[in-house]
Image (cartoon, rainbow, N blue to C red; front, side, top):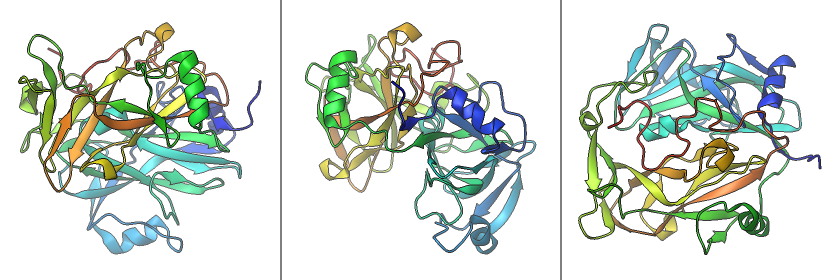
Length: 365
C-alpha cells in the first residue's frame, strides 16, 4: 500500500538533489545519504558569537550575525572549536522545499557521544531543528563543544536532516501493534505512552569488572571529529563500574555515556527517534535526541541485540539513577518508501550490533 505521509527514504532524498529542491556547494560524499536521512556538511567558515540566539519571525540568521559575531574562523584547513564557546557555521547544503515537504534535524550519533551541542536553524525560525514546509534558503549549524575541544573543517559532518510529508508519527495503539509484531524493544512489558515506547537504563554492567558507562574528563587534548580510532579512551574518559549497588549518582553538569537495558529494533519500513525523558520525573535528561535509521537492530541487517547508547547529564542537583529506571523514549514514524539500503548493510554503519560503546573516534580495547 502506497502511503501519502511519511519519511523520505534514500532514493527520494537523492531525487531532491536532482530536482533542485536540495542544493550543495559541492558534490555529495558517497556515503552522505543514509537510509532515512542526509548528513549535513560544514561550510568554509565558523562565526564565533556572543551567545546562542533565535532568528525570530522578523529576521534572517545573517542579519542577527551582523550584530552578534565576535570573529570569523577559516575552516578550510581545520580549526579548533573551544569548549564553552558558541559558533555558527553556514552549511554546504541549502533547501528549496516544496509546500508539502518539511524537515527536522538532529546531531549525528558520534556528535552526541562527544558532548558537542549542535542544532540547526534557518531564517525567520522560532524553533531550532525544525524546518517548515516550503522553506527556501540557507541552513546554519550552531555548535558548542561542552566537554572536549574539537577540530573541525569544511566538509565535517556533525548533524543530519530528515524529510517528511504530512504526519507520520505512530500513536500508542499503533506502537503496541507494531511491537507485538516486530518487537521494537526487548521488553516483555513495554511501557507505551505519549506516542513513545520507553527505554530503561542498564546499571548491572558488562564484562568481568561490570563496566556500566563512562564519565567525560575535563581539560583534555582536542578531538578531531574526522579521524576514527585516533584517541586513547583513558585520556578522555573515566570508566564507571558496578560496585555492588546497581545505581549511579549523576554529578551536576557532568557528562555520562550509558546504555539501555533493552535492545532496540527499527523495522525497514519505519524510522525512529530518541526523545529526552520528561524532566518532571527527575533532574536529568538524555542530553541529545537522536535518529535511528531503518534497519537499526534488524536481524537481517546484522543488528540483533543493538542497544541504545545514551548521553546523560544531570542538572542543578546530584541525582541517583537505578538499574531499570526509565530514561528515554523512542517515537516511531512511517517511511514513505522502503529504503534501498538499511542501517548496517554495507553502509559503514558504526553502531550496528552495539552494546555500551563510545564514539568511533576512540580505539577499541
